[in-house]
Length: 234
Image 1 (cartoon, rainbow, N blue to C red):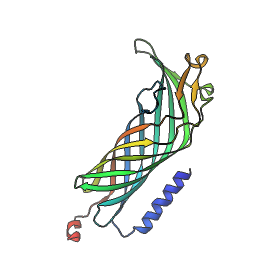
Image 2: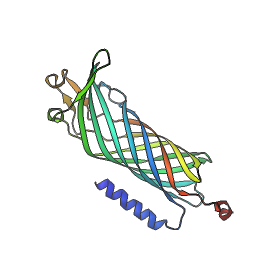
Image 3: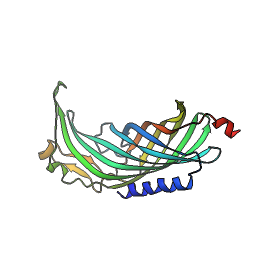
Image 4: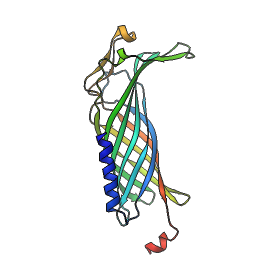
């Protein structure tokens, strides 16, 4: 939980430095899809991810540049094809920390760039199968599936994207489109499954695989804009 403690300290430090400024916390929700473009040896399906958390925005006086650190609970679900009807599912549950900078392009658009860090605290592995008709579905998991799986608990990468501010009931909100790219590995060694275990010899994850993630989400601001704001700025 080192990332959680680091992010918590960052939030508290930001609050102390910016107590008199009009900065604020935001509730963050989002989801998206990912793919391993750099590793063609894997039999991939489109993967998915979801997150919920908070961030804290620290703006300069004219709000053209903002620091936007955040911490989220995130689930990354990876799928590898064993056969046309059978998949191996690897879900990584993690604490996700992002250190984003927001740069104002115009009144309605912000450029978002930053660094991301993940700390994986739990993984689940299962196999699912659908019959030829697509009507019957079942899944199973056991200790044998986890043999040979060595997760890389610390992961890092970068993010780039756009944010579109809007207002609801006197509060600033943001619609976000982000592209996250991990530069570190998901596993410490290739994760292979044998024919005796799942019916085919298959490589589920490789050391060189680096997921690229497209995320769509919202930042919901907790602070209501005061009606006198325009008068104070003038």
